[in-house]
Length: 157
Image 1 (cartoon, rainbow, N blue to C red):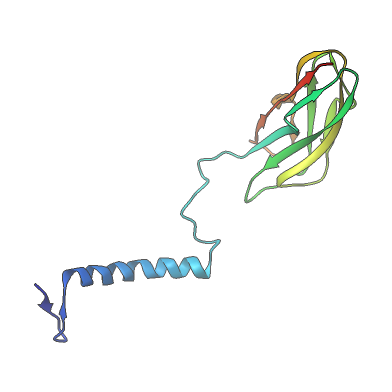
Image 2: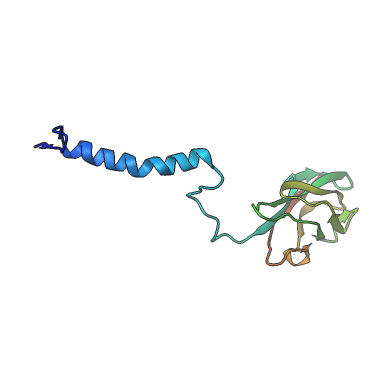
């Protein structure tokens, strides 16, 4: 049953709860609208900064002796830092010839960036992997983890 208020109005319990809820939420909503970068319900405190490195395309089918190009890509997502420069050594087997053993990118970046292009040639038929050793990646920032992915190369006549 509704109780009379000090002004003589009858207010039901659900209306009262709704008004209290709206009064509590309104300042948070206004803060989010007026300063969207300052208010975040999602935090990244538990995520360590890391750089990801991979080749594009991720899989190649070719013939022995035919050269092809691969882009070396990197991704670093940080709200407070940029990568000033990066270098990485490319790992490959003896059945693959590449024009660069080491990729060096001296331009600061954040986000997804092409850090180099390499030319590859399979010398024989077979399946091969081309990768980057995470321990060979050099960046001038401390405590940056490295995740790398390999490219699969299939060479057949």
